[in-house]
Length: 355
Image 1 (cartoon, rainbow, N blue to C red):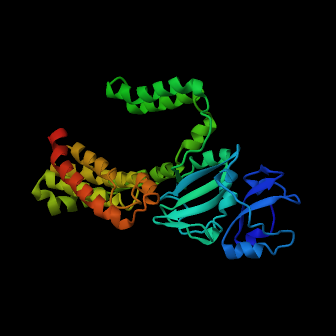
Image 2 (spheres, one colour):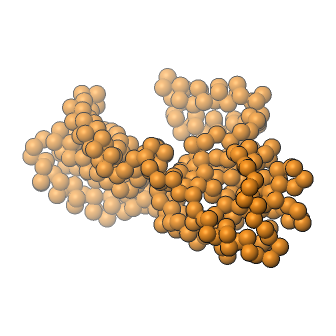
């Protein structure tokens, strides 16, 4: 729909024609007599009223039902820590064209922004109220740029496959726990059964993969191998062993947990684990003890991110809607991290001894 409104920072979010609400009018040709529902700053709306062929009709009363229809819905989405939208305005990111959705409002902690949205740089944790066709809104749930927190009304598809999907979800972790098959085998077999059994299509399976994690692992695994093969891991291990090794393996384990815990606040847990694992294994060899407790310490620490909203997706999920600030994560997350650090230092050697 080309109306000339884009130059005035005004969005068309609905269209009323013959008392019918044609919501999501971005792809609907305009006719004479159509009533357009516009979103934008008051000053820009007044300017838009002067455009040829348009006249403001301010006395019309509208409600939330005028923004939704059978095909069009509303959803709340949080800007994720890995989103490419960080620091960019919706206009710069071509938001509407890329996501087929319109931003109706932005909530940033205690602030609710409803004007000049296309010129507002987005931040991690911003909660966006989005309007679009339900088919497009469902696709946002698979996009790493967003974390959806609002339900999109839609009928559950393939309900007859529900029991097969449930059986696969139960079998995949239970069989390895009973020692009947490795987790790698059951996970791959479960994925194959889900596709072959009709629980999801190949396209849906492909779209559900977080390719950013795959490429991260593809880059970090060779880095870990390079650290091992080049002798860098051994060199670092010698330094760690010389610095704190004389305190004993428990203190070294505690140091590795603390290092992994701090790194995972700034980088992904996958990258942290891959980076530190060869170094920890080399240190264990230097100390003449089993590497197992060190590896468990890194695994636990890399998954315990509480001090920043960037460390893990669930932290970012509540950041905007909860009205939190960075200092809230530091105030609550720091004691949690310290508690987990102390408990892990004490209990990991009990469950996974050094000898």
